[in-house]
Image 1 (cartoon, rainbow over the protein chains, first blue to last red):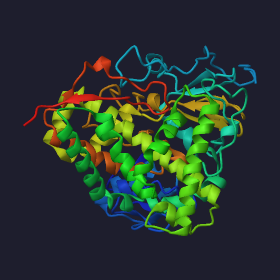
Image 2 (image 1 turned 45 degrees about the vertical axis):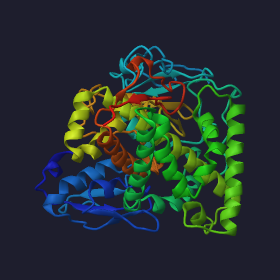
Image 3 (image 1 turned 120 degrees about the horizontal axis):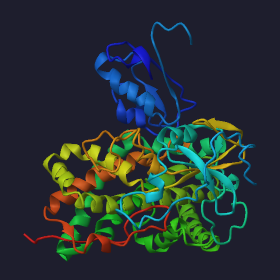
Length: 81
Length: 409
């Protein structure tokens, strides 16, 4: 995570891939306002794809910690997928 | 397989290391001295017990990348062991039925998916009161029998053992039937025959239990799993894996962690002054102590990591202790510092196999450490620190016993 996304002021857009999720729970532990786990499978649930400014730093940390690479972080203006 | 530096595509030639394992020369919480002197090389050649030339990983970023990469396999039969085990001449046997630690996707995923919902952050936090209750009971008994105790026997072992037994639906009263078998599985000095016998005994015990749960389900994990498509054999295997993983790991974190805090009075005082530091203290102890070590993988194809080419078929040993003391990731890594943000350590591994029970371990430790130090404000070692017996021949590091004492009120 380098460049402009490091700024806490920069908006961010998150997406999750439940097929890749290992259910380790690091996201729900690190950024509970943004991520959750469903009760049946324990897989990632994205509560806020565009988290509020006060939750962005935690969300970024959760992206970095995810053991399965199941969370993607895109700039909202990014044109690539 | 022989080592040819040109065939391996190496531009750097280094003397192959064997895995350093001797901690006895220094502080009991530090990795073997030879491991930390390798910290400037994230990846280097390593000679394995059977002569295989593979790799040793001591850098945090390289270790993390390898553990997250599905091109590195966890299948036991593809791995070479750092040190020879009696009874294993060449290859390791494949994972026994239900042991998902030795499987890759999609076989691993099938088991893991059945279990992840049972170990979520929310579910584990709901167990906080139950952990607190077990902790109080153990501390009551310890206080009454005191003012000296073996902290391992009185506290570090029973708290996680009671919890995993209850969660799985294994009668705690039966623990004499499986506790020594589990210890044998993690004992590096035990031969393959002894390990096999211990595993068979553990499976037999769980097999009987699975039949009982099928006949009369109760409110526990094993009973829940009888509703899945797992066979009886798979159920016993999964149960055995969870029981083994849940018994020894947290117990050794609690025992060794108490030793570490008692040996760092300034840190302990800071924790006592602010119990709000408990979660952070647990993360730092996980990093600093890294009790489950090392982690092995085998390359399924040629992969480049940190500028070195790992060839298909080569085994990689990720030293968790070394990666968690990587100064590039954790400045001043040999200092226990509970004010540090130790998040991102690899103590629970990384990738698809990252510890399933880690949130349970966090809850147990976050409850148990503060409760222990609140109950015994004058807790201290009852023997000189160098006389505390260490488990330095086990895959789970820790203390064999921890004699402690305190002033009676």
